[in-house]
Image 1 (cartoon, rainbow, N blue to C red):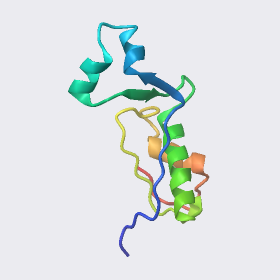
Image 2 (image 1 turned 180 degrees about the vertical axis):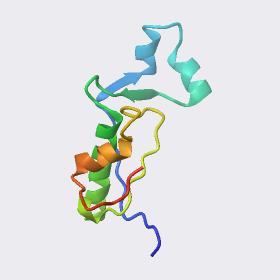
Image 3 (image 1 turned 90 degrees about the horizontal axis):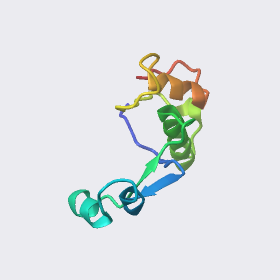
Image 4 (image 1 turned 45 degrees about the vertical axis):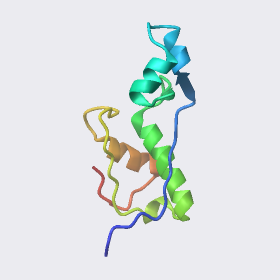
Length: 107
């Protein structure tokens, strides 16, 4: 059996910070940031939002896109530089938030 991507999903936190918003707080401008990075705005997680919350919502949307249920997932991989905590892994937290108890590996 081969790995397949059957659906995709994404999620952005509600708080949006534009380059103009940043320019009000630090010495920069929309033009300076956009020219160097291409970034016009970024989304910031709320204080009570963790990486696993963002990943779990993205996964729910991917499952809906693929018309699948959480128990149809065979493997969870989460790659991040901002984990919820060092242990357990964010992938296992996502697994719990999705309600997957069928023994699928998560890392």
